[in-house]
Amino acid sequence: MASRLLHRLRHALAGEGEGDREGQGGGGSEAEEFPESSELEDDTDGLSTRLSGTLSFTSNEEEEAAEENEDDAASQELGDLCELGLPKNPGAMENGGRCQDPSPAPAERQGSNLLTRQLQDFWRRSRSSLVPQRLLFEVTSASVVSERSSKYVLYTIYLIRSGQFDKAPAAIARRYSDFERLNRRLRHQFGCDMAGVSFPRKRLRRNFTAETIAKRSRAFEQFLSHLHSITEIRRSSDFLEFFFLRDLQAAQRLTCTGMYREALATWSNAYRLQDRLGVCNSGRFLLTLAGLVVCHQELDELSEAHCYCQQALQLLEAQDSHPLLEPFLQAHVHLSWKVGKDKRQSEARLQGLLGAGVALQQQPTLKEFLIKEALD
Image (cartoon, rainbow, N blue to C red; front, side):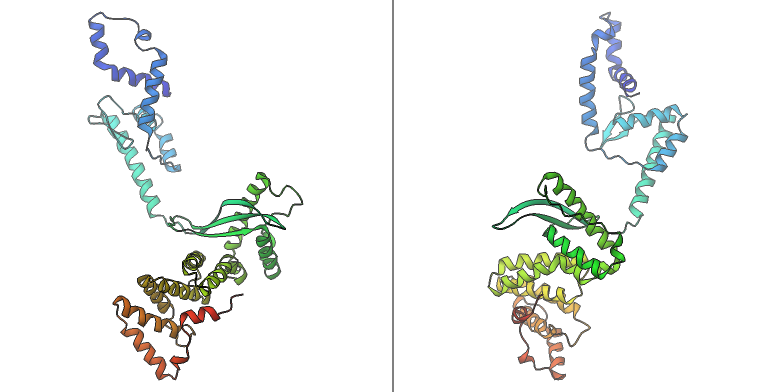
């Protein structure tokens, strides 16, 4: 079918040029004027140019419409030409891979309108349909790590929200024993829910072959996706802290030793992990915000510190007795004064705490709170 259409198009494009040659008697056979090899090369180049950057839409409705119009020769020819990315006649213009005809025949115009309506209807349905977002777990790399007394594979996993592009992805690096520990704890706590969850078996040999690593990577992706699909497990502390507790502990150590730039990167990754997992109202998340405020402040990035401080106070808006409330209010007043922002609301809340009998001078600062907080 494609070769017949290309053959027909070649004659149409040749058009008046062939007629002039025939009238002049300059003849020669068709095979001599257009040898097969040159025809294939020319048409292949043309198809490559026309098809580049073309989007294809397919759906069941479009297939059924094509079957109903199967007897309509003009519409069928139009559809075939458009699939190949070719114009319907020599005068057609190309625009982004769509066929356009400045002077179509009535049957062709009807077929073109039908195709356009089908594409528009399909596009509207796809835009208006609500696709629920879900969290995807993707193993992006795996590396063999050799230490003095052990050798293991370290898997890097990205947490991705479907349908979104993350400029700064949330990532973790875990080994087989970490996944095995999580699996054992969850089976002990959620025996019935974990009955249908698969986990890759431990192997006595060939643990470091490319085939084993690839299979385990896919198995870990499925394992985490299955766990996340179970509500009770998804909300459990064992599942959540598998992702971000290690980052919190590392960030705390770096902050305590004054390595604020390194600590900031770790706090930021912990922030993104908790955001992807949907636990932005927990105590761990408030601690993460405190770490971000302290590190940005120590690095003289006051605007960023002020933004994270405001986010924490929004989470604490309905609380009057949280241990981090007064430290965040004190930090917000100081940062607002530094960056020229309104601090009256925070000052009013501080006065309210003082009227309630809270000894503000005895409260720790955010940095002191980070150092004293036990993360285990």
